[in-house]
Image (cartoon, rainbow, N blue to C red; front, side, top):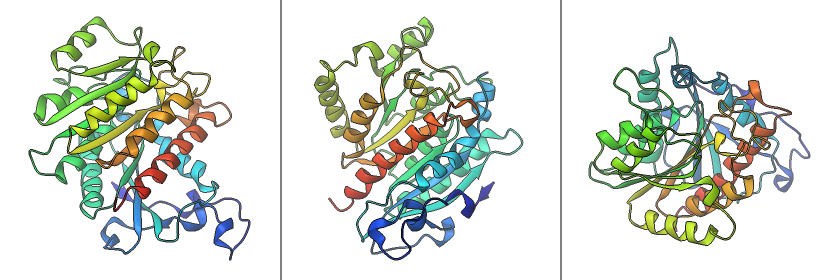
Length: 321
């Protein structure tokens, strides 16, 4: 089901009602139905929410990520508006998963993402469980030619390459894509040695997945990783970036389905996010597994909102370059 975002999600501190240099996001973000998105002289980026954690339920995870999209909006609302006068952020609403019908919700999300991208507007999807990614991918593929090469970059502790013969879940999306789309490739950074079975490592090798272990993502190795990402992005027509918040150390992001004691620190994720969203082939990003029901003092929501802000900055700056 498609719904518009409630105005109450975009409320916050007001320092001025006339001086735009004192404005915050909630004073500038424009709520707009997807059918009303038309051509614009402004450089725009669109937000869309995916209110769903059916995939997490099927994957036997802890529920609550369906509350993530609106929590992220509230986390963004009072951040300062630092964008240019010719830049605009639109919120085109939510896809809501009803009656456990994950597959239909993913298809509907794909339609929204595809519509946004076809209007030459970068798109950020606010998840939702990581099953959000499959709907995001469907939209990207629909906006491209059938043989366009899609490079998926996943910042995640897990491969999410489980079998989907019984039903898809938040642990199957990348296997679905790789087995269904010969023009899609997969590069995942942050893999936990103790978070994936041997079978999943074998499947990753079989599907020619590029991956980097969490414990290899040190300051000393950072430039090598960034160079590898650069080479990977240059080889693809379109780069799709997805972030599963459980890749972060649980001390920084407790509000996730599967916390990671050995996870990454925020600065590492931020560096990768900046690198990928600044690439001219990157036009969409999703953030998943923000679970406000499990969050201590809103730490995960706030961090997720900051990551979204970083992506908005780069995606808007890159238009027309």
